[in-house]
Image (tube, rainbow, N blue to C red; front, side, top):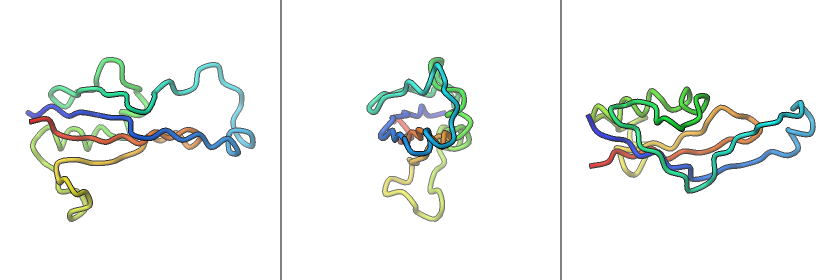
Length: 100
């Protein structure tokens, strides 16, 4: 199996949606842009957000098994994917890349 590097490339805060819909919370997302994790054997890195993992897990597993080429050539690098977590208030976009 291949290792998969997971890089947080963008984090957005939709302040208008927070103000309109979200109840105050004590702990919001603590991921920051540029943060990097390594998935070994298609497994979730120990300190990776469990909710974000739910959004990217299947793609990480495919890449770890040597797959790729998602959606008929969607990515310039066929052994990568750009995906976002499911947080509608502060989504984080993650770049997944196999490590040779």
